[in-house]
Image 1: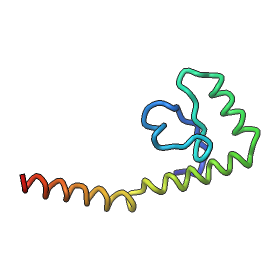
Image 2 (image 1 turned 30 degrees about the horizontal axis):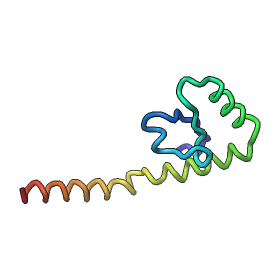
Image 3 (image 1 turned 120 degrees about the vertical axis):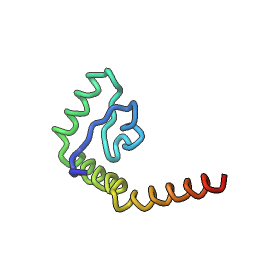
Image 4 (image 1 turned 135 degrees about the vertical axis):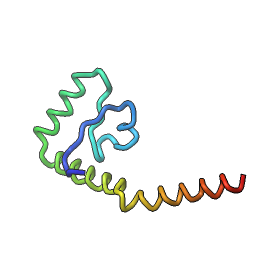
Length: 86
């Protein structure tokens, strides 16, 4: 959301939110060499760093309250209608 490049663990929830090489660099958990490589890439490749940062910002906008709020309200309404019908 801060338009910064992101390095994420390729395990757990973060792996589902980011795409390696597009809006983040993913590393395997417990792999310090992969983490060091990702950090090195961000430090030495300003173009890739800017691209990842811009893509991360766009990805984060997809999770804004303005975008997700109406979807969440609609889901709750569907749930309420279904529970009343049951």
